[in-house]
Image (tube, rainbow, N blue to C red; front, side, top):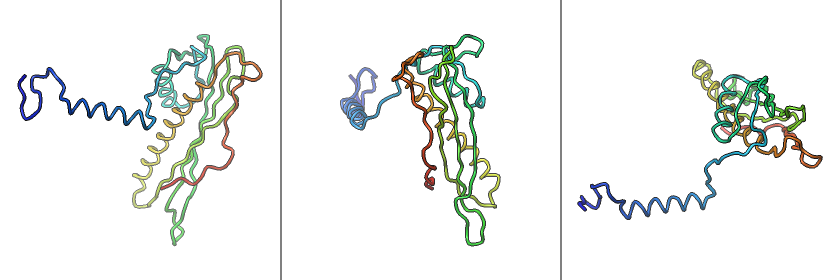
Length: 196
């Protein structure tokens, strides 16, 4: 085996140092609780989505179909369950400067959802995922701040879809008994002021 300064240039072997580094990295990740997202096992195998923006529905479709054996179908294609979505955004002032001009805004995003079985059974009652972000503001950079707000709303939308896929996995049966019903989730208190 030909080596140049301790590196195997023949491509036939892995150096001991590289192997130990790889092994140590894997051990460190497993020790901190890191775990790759695995396959979800949804109770429904055919899901229809009603409402929501095309961007959000496309991301939800990718995540559900890419991480499970569930497929997204149209409402008229006999789905096992139908997910109803609606979203809302808001903007409020967080702080003013000494001249009374806005320095920071709070951006708010709400995703309302409910899940019904094909026979009308309520699987997830009307629930809300509420998110917020803080954004500094300056009249000198109006266009840039508008683009930043769009990016922050998209980030919150993606975060909400990630949370929604985990909440859909809570449903264990399409015909839940009295003790098996999934509780609704709603913000119980106003969101805290976002950090800057």
